[in-house]
Length: 566
Image 1 (cartoon, rainbow, N blue to C red):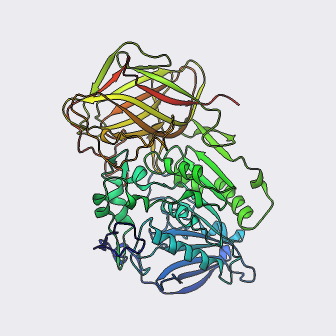
Image 2: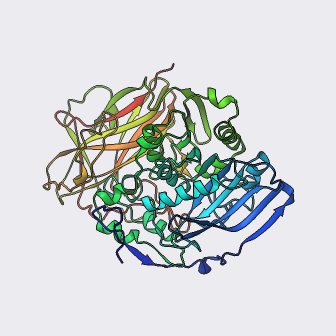
Image 3: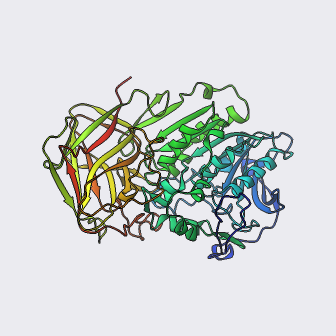
C-alpha cells in the first residue's frame, strides 16, 4: 500500500497491516486512570490522551510529583516499544543492569520515574503514532514522526503541572528521535540527551558499507510494529531503495538546525549499531552548549548506573531548572580509554575528534602477516575463503603489530587495502581489530548491550560500493555515497577504503594490535544466545577466494589515531 506524498519527496512511503497486535503482545486497551504511589510521592496518570495537530490521539503515561502545587520540568521518552513494557533485567541476559537500577515503572530504554520524580521532575512516556493503541499510521524516523514529537513537546510544555522547559532522554530509538525533533526547535524544548542513537539509518543499521543487514534490521521493524492500524512497511522500502536516495535522506535529521543544549553519550562498544551515529550527531549539531561522554561499557547498564543518573540529573538541573552547578565547567568531551573489559581511564578533552591526534600509517606485509610503520617494498599477497558455514569457523587474513611503548589509539581508523577475487565481480569485506596481550591472548571488550567478547573496532565494505564522496571524506574517515554499484572484473586488483568505527584503547609495551580481514561478521551468535543480535550480515555475493595484496604499488595500510600525552 502506497502513501500520499505530502512532502513531495519524489517517492512514496509504503505501509502494511499488523503482524502483531497489542493484545497478542500483552497490551490492554487504554483506560485513563490516576493514582498516587506513596513511596516516591508520585502521581501516576495512565493512558493520558495527547492530541496531534491533525486530531490523531496518542496515549502517554505521565509520572509526576503528587504535590501539584509546584510545576516541574517534564522529561519525555518517545517509544515504539510500548510505554507499559518494563525494562526487565532478567530478560536481557548479561546486560549488566542490576536489580534496583530500574523499577517496575521503568519503560524499556526510558528514564526511571522513581529516580526523577523525587528530584522535582515529571516523566512522560508516550506510544508513537500507530504503535500499540495510539491512533494513526506509524512512520519510523520520518518527518511526520518528528512533527508528532514536536506536538508532544509543546503539549508537555504547556500543561498546568509543567514549568514549560522540556527535556528528552532515552536510549536507542528513544535517542534517535531526539535528533529529528530537535532540528525543528519546538519553543518549549530546552535540552536533549541522546544516549547512544544512530543518525544514518542506511550506513549504520540497514546496510553497513553497502552490505545489507540480514537479521537485526529485519527483526527490528517487527519489534516496533505492534499496532491496531498499519505501519510503515520498512521491509518493502528497504528492498525498493538499495542505494542511498531521498528515501534514506528522509530518515536523517539536518543537524545544522539543532541548537538546543545537548548531553550526548556514545560508546566504543556498540560497533555496528549506535557508535558511529552518536559521534556524528555530536560533531554536526550546532548547539553552542554540548557535551560528549564516550565510554566502553554496555549501553543499558551505563544508562542506569547511579553515577550516570547523577550526571544526567546535574545536566537537567542546569538546562531545565537554570541551576548554577558544575555542568558549566564540564569538559566538552570526556573519553574512557579502555585497557580491558571493565578497566578504563577517563580523561577530559576539548573537542572531538581529538585535535592532537597523530594519524599513523601501519603498512601491511602479507608475507609476514605483520604491520609496520615503514613502507613495505616486498610484493606479496595472502588469500582467505570468504564463505563461512559454521559459527566461529571463519577463514581470515590477519596482520599484527607489537607496540614497543605505551600507545593509545582513540578516534577514527581507516583501512586502505588492495584486493581481488578471480571467481566473481564483487566482494563483501569484513574488518575487525583485536587487542592481544603480551602472551598473544585475545583481550575481549564489552560488545553491544549483552556480550563480553567484543573487538576493538569494526568496519565493512561491499567492494562495488567503494566509490568515495570527495567532499565528505577525510584522511581518517572515508565516506561512501552508496548511490551506485561499480562491479570489478574478476581478477582485477582494486583499492578499498574501509571506514572503521571510532574506538578508544590503550596498549602497553609488548601488547599487540591485530587486523582481521574476512568474509563474514567477526562475532556471530546462535539464536539461543542472542535472538536479536545473531549474525547481522550474511554475505550473498562472496565466492572463490579473496586476495589481499601488499607492498610495492599495492600500498595497503591501516591508518590509526595515535594520541600523545597532553
